[in-house]
Length: 229
Image 1: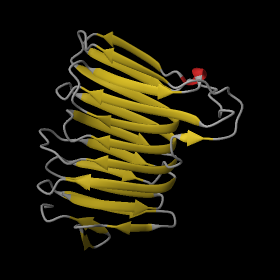
Image 2: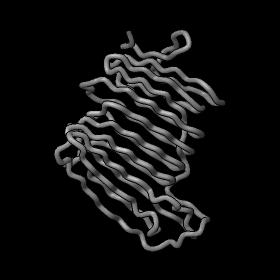
Image 3: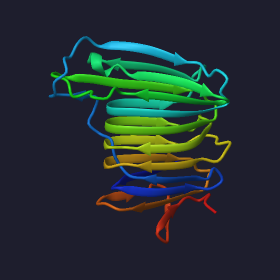
Image 4: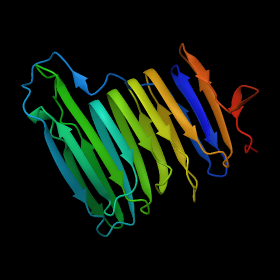
């Protein structure tokens, strides 16, 4: 497994064989607890949700979290199995799913207007997707920490936008198909975990920061692994 850590604004990554192309910027950070704001804090609630695939053959999932901590991985029996923990009633996540023909659209969203709590806030999402369903994934994160373990998913497209904080994107696994990805962020730290047996090319650009390429080797203006080319 190769590990690439990036502090800056943008990084372009390409994985041949699995053919992943990504623009990575850093971001996320600010834990799952927050102070200040104006929403009342109540008792901690934990809600579990599951979504069945229905007649869909492929699915696009759009995820929007303003601030908090999120884990995303595979292993679900249904299309989605999720646990949500929060102590501000207005933060109850909105989950919607519809199918048009053979294509499903899943939306998971932190409600709009979810301002900060009057006391310590707690907001965590644990999302698990089905490993076999071809999935387009669009994730928009504001502030917090996230861990995306994607190597077991049948992922066909990834669009990840991060704000302020820290995130880990784990792409290790036995990839069966190509992946097109775009990863972009703002301020913080992003760590990419990459498979050794898939060709990888990483290009970083913009901003102030540093790239720690791990096992990747410098080649011209890019970083590559031993399997590249």
